[in-house]
Length: 304
Image (tube, rainbow, N blue to C red; front, side):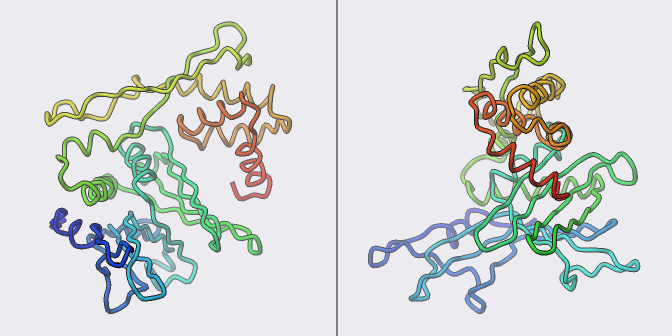
């Protein structure tokens, strides 16, 4: 990955004021509607997965590039009769992750989170979801892309990741952070690639008495440092107890959620990160079950 991050940031991500409008250099002058790939990697396993550090623009009516977007672009495709169809796959699923999603992906790849799930909802486009889980068979980890269509139901593509694939995708996550903040040290960027976690305390008496849970977000993390010895991913033991968090999800779901749907509760327990479950717990304790009901609809429609 031979990228001059400072130069690329200066060239494409730093705008200038013209006539009261911030404009940027177009990343692809010959084809403005397309972006560019600063770095790419290809996974070949039970399916194909293209990984790219990606930049694209938005243009105004005058043809000026008035916005610039950067992200980690992932293109999932099928393997058909032993051949990888890649971009020729009519049923491929393409999605782009911003730095927030990349932090969660990175944490899961590094083993700091037991699972990974992120929803991508955008106006005019079918909702999509990317999730990750351990397989323990041919591949250590599997990434899944799912696209939901109101007319055609849902379709999904699973791609197994080898240890080599895991490393290269992690490096592309870090590369996105480096593109956004080229002046920061690599050590500091890696340190901050792990997302914030919240602490969950166990229920002392009644396992289902979720009112006894007091979730306090961590307000202060370790200070950035240039010492490589201090940027290791936190041990799993330092993270909130997932068993306690799952128990809290069950308590909220069965005691406070009007639907009390056990299938949805189990889906949340098995497919959500600790941070996602914590958000659902807090929302439920405050009486907001909007996200619970959304997941319920996905699970009951067979799209979960």
